Amino acid sequence: MPDSKTHWEQVYSSRKPHEVGWYQAYPEIPLHLIASTGANKTAAIIDVGGGASNLVDALLENGYCDVTVLDLSAAALKATQARLGEASNQVKWLVADITSFTPPRQYDVWHDRAVFHFLTEAADRQRYVEAARAALPPGGHLIMATFALDGPPQCSGLDVVRYSPESLRQAVGEGFALAESFGGLHITPSQGKQSYTFCRFIRN
Ligand SMILES: C[S@@+](CC[C@H](N)C(=O)[O-])C[C@H]1O[C@@H](n2cnc3c(N)ncnc32)[C@H](O)[C@@H]1O
Image (tube, rainbow, N blue to C red; front, side, top):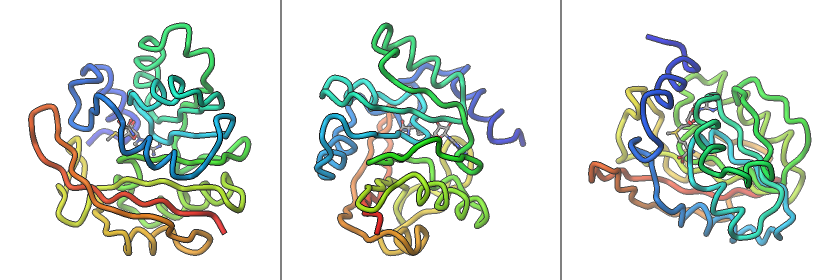
């Protein structure tokens, strides 16, 4: 079994962004959740484990001007940068493991779609939550999308932890209040259905 970094580098080196199961042509729910924060266009937004997602493209198109994309995989970020072309210069890029990440600054919005659920070890979840606590000031928003309790037990060949809004609230623990949650279906490029839990928390 390759380590996590090797796994994700292989995924993004061997598949085009639209060929992966988590591909979304347009990130409608992430944009809705980010708009729900009330953050203005100069708000600092970090997409944690953003991979080759189109979210950064949509954020720039919507006028957000302080966007950071972090991912374990340099290949994923390279694909996104190539797609964005010139516009990639407006974005801050971080190749980092979120479980050993020391935020260099604070953010108003932390967005994670389908990343936290790969953390099957309690110690890794703890380090993730500590990074989010350090990164978000009081009033900052933590947006998370994970597979739901009736979602698949694996993604990209890796085991995941599935969450309800309540178990995700417990996983993020003290320091965050649940502001909004709902379920939703993601349709994969091969027409599979994946049930997700979406939560938005506010930093106390
Ligand atoms: C299922 S993909 C989701 C990508 C993106 N959020 C989206 O919605 O399209 C999971 C992403 O998390 C990244 N990832 C996995 N473990 C990570 C870690 N420990 N630190 C940072 N990124 C990680 C992977 O490289 C991959 O891009």
